[in-house]
Image (cartoon, rainbow, N blue to C red; front, side, top):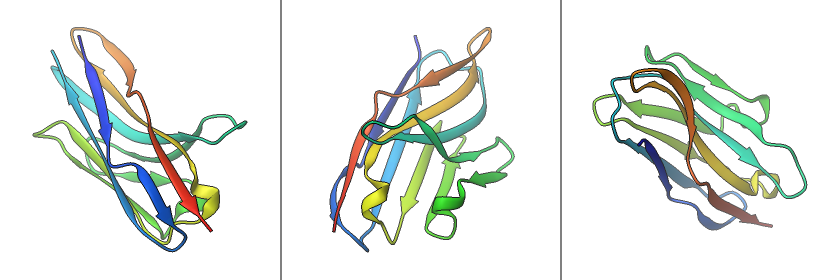
Length: 118
């Protein structure tokens, strides 16, 4: 059984920073892309940032220059440093990983709330 557990969400004022972390555990034989997605109230889930096993990153235009994704492959963790936060960044943030447990599959964390006040 694979689990992805996020931490680091919370309430912050506009212009502030938060760091999200996600740890994957279980019978993981290999891990490919990892990423962060978010879902605001009444909105569809959207991509925030992804990082490949080789370290190639991809960001949504709305967060470029403000958010930084990183990973520690040895520890099966992925982090998201969020700076210059805006009220429109308010959402539930979900960790995502494409990994191999004997078969490849996509796994999701339970989500962590980020609220940015104006």
